[in-house]
Length: 184
Image (cartoon, rainbow, N blue to C red; front, side, top):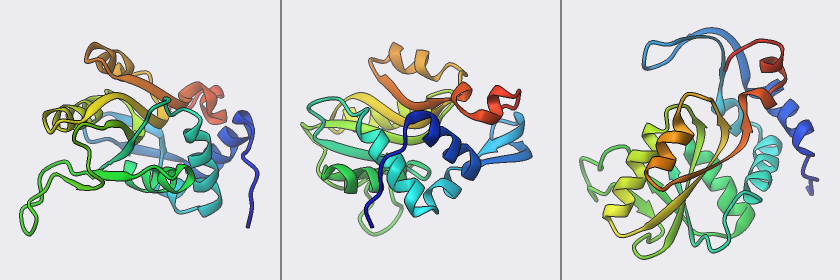
């Protein structure tokens, strides 16, 4: 089935309708939110996931050689983005596997290649920074990241301080519910 990529505003509305869930929700750092962006609901909708991946493809810098999905929320997005672009894909674990291969990275080779990190939501930027550091130590060239949603909690600044450009598809204010005063 062939689909047409939505215009940015229409895609933002579709993403909000599917993935913006009313709360309350408590994040890992203890922060409480009245609504939450549930990337798994987006990933569970094949048409929306495909259209989101096609839109993310337009954010990839020229010269991207490998995509790297960050565990766990970035993985389905990275798989869809890889399918949409034909770029090879690596998977970045938070910690090395404790058995079997003992690897931190799975999939495509990243050493010496220009890798773009893929994640779902960027808040502080800490998880992307950690993934980038580990990939750089392993010899990857990491200068860019893409995400579906950026929340203005310092992530872009932190990443820029470490020579990482953040390319978000959407920011909080692009989501219709956020314009009405909700926070994601």
